Image (tube, rainbow, N blue to C red; front, side, top):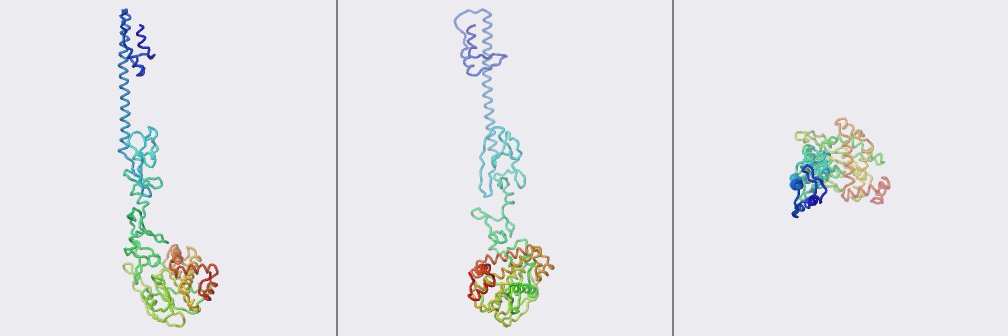
Length: 482
């Protein structure tokens, strides 16, 4: 059986129960060597049986080797089909594109990892075969990729993010897109796709740029635009007044007298008592403009004059009874009466526009009283920036004293003039303080060369040398000390 030993020489593997355990290369060698010798030797019968058995076993092995190759090819085909299925699932479930805060779009790139490496960012469990998303540098089950605001799955092709949290575009807009404080709609984007709006420099009231040209009214006191759901009060002379400013508005001449007394005491505390009793009248806009035309001298703050210190004899229409609110939030039944001014000194009267809040009325009155003090004390004709500047300094000082002398809880009851308002209307002290800060801000940020620059120059001089030395320098030189 020497040739038979050659048949199995290439491998030492055993043939057992019809299973073949050799590799392909060895199998090929064995198959190639499967050729009986042709030497012509005659074998015994027992040898013939052994040979037949060996040949039969060899044929079985060849058949099983063929089946092994087929099984290996079949496994490869199954693996390729599975890979194609996974790739196809990625195509079917393409990840959404993110819109971040600057509205730039990002398309996540699908990544391929073996099983066990994909962990869902939502439920923190392994993602098996099937559809998944690759967004925000994390893998997700489709049902786990949810909006931060509404907690519903995000199935849209695009989404927005804030702080690495995903949002539906609509939810993000509702949460973060600014709304107009006037019309309450989302502020539209401009031609460049950017959100453009206007904002008040003090109140930070945001509004659409179109409201600057669509006749949306502003409060004549605080300058805030009228929101659509809030009804501003219409005064007889065409001005609008918001409800917060209306709370402390002074509407007639008699109502203003306690405030006038308070400011006279303020001047006395500065050793600047007025020697003459100057009449104080509250008037409408038209009466104020007519009185201004009757004055020969003077500079007036444009675009609207809200106070005058008169030196000429005139007849003024003064408000003797405050109006009441009628239909449509309009002031009605206001009563006026003529008041003839007689010149007994260099100042005939102080006029203040009616319908302004107490603190604004007081600051205007403090300004006009400084004009009266300068004239009654015989100050020579001053340049406009010096005279208006020092008058603004006194108005600013009075506002500052009002805010600093009372806490936010009792600001309205800090003086006798406001005590009756506090008891009658129950106003908001917090807004009253904010309003006073706004009026101070207006004086400080005025860009006019006469009122604004004049105030800043006067304030620097007063802070450096004191009020009395500054006034003495103005008396002697007509200028601020430097």
